[in-house]
Image (spheres, rainbow, N blue to C red):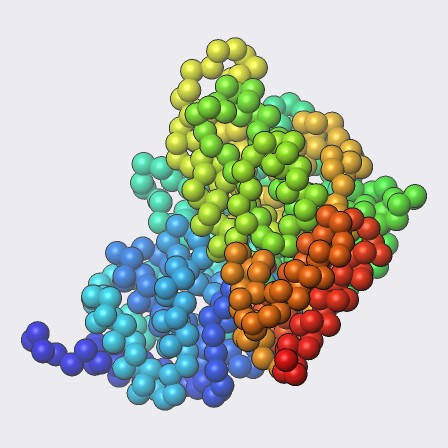
Length: 550
Ligand code: 16G
Ligand code: MG
């Protein structure tokens, strides 16, 4: 038996038969920062093949449950996407992204079966072992059909599966971790959507310690899955104790065409203005979620200053300052190391505040949640956010143990430890979660008795510009130093350096987008006019190199 052909196996016939029903549209596919994401018409075969990979992954991971989320986040309603969640609720391990890419790009059903069996052989996967896959989808109409393709793959590979139907992306991540920790000494929460709400609601009450959230919060749900899920969560909140007065807007999930249309976190961040509908009342505390509720932006319209936005950098520095104060009060600063993780897009004002005022280390990683997440795991308390509103705070097992077991020297210390322990439950530990992050912000504002204006005055942002540049082939732009410097094309970085030198306190970088065929240029400088000039100069450099006349 040792010489059995590694490219054949027990599921061959079933996969061949099922795959014929889910043909792939020939083109080059790549598992990117957000899985496979594109026009939904192209995704039937892709989703089928992702199902095959998830079953392999589960068998590779000692039969642990693997998650699949079907969503295209902030993209228009006609798009969809599919991504895999690993057993602890984190993003798929990077090495496996290439296997997903290989399976999806198989040119025929026969080649697909061969690659599937070869992967099993290479990774010593027993295809007859137990497996489990759980999945959910956002509100896009195409989700239903893609789930059917997924189910065919799971049936063909004899993989038991659970359909959680419509969920936010972070809820699916929660369910994966909850499923895999069920019955273990340290569980993550009840294995149900209700379990998620109950966990957050209980933690919310504990973190507030009798304080009440003041005023009304208007939440724009991007006409996506966040709307109905936030409404459901609010049913679990004891409002008399907590005072969370939420006004949900843009929660129309019955008209698919309005998803992410002129609303949502991506609109707010990229357009730098409030969603036009409904026009927020001046001074009203507002926030926006994105289409799958894993990104969050706060803002208000000020009678004097106009629109003021509090983005991921602001949430990061708010969380970092609050948590550091609590750790100090709990007398745990020497015991636990705290760090903040950002990307090159983080505003220099925030980085200066975190390193200079809070005295915390800041590590910069390449763009994409998985990079930040892994670095944040190196700390006892790792705070990570992208400027675009993706992010969370991770607590190590040691940290959680310390909050619960370290002997407090005073009632104030005990209170601080209790709040920290509750925060570890309130903040989604698997992935950035807009609903959970929103509760974190509300709790901090309540504890500090702050308005958004108080929060915004903790530091000033440096004027900045982000520009998308069309180029022939974005892949010619290669970077190092967490995407802050170009290594290719040769000479481009020197020119950027020369441009930056002309301005005081300035910074600029160019990187290839991970999600579209374009380059992005980011610049920061001391004044609006300087940043405009600097950005224009760097854009011209990139255009010149990118459109090939070196
Ligand atoms: C993806 C990433 C996001 C990143 C963005 C950058 C995840 C879940 N999503 O949406 O974190 O900020 O790509 O896009 O990791 P870009 O490479 O086109 O600039
Ligand atoms: Mg999203």
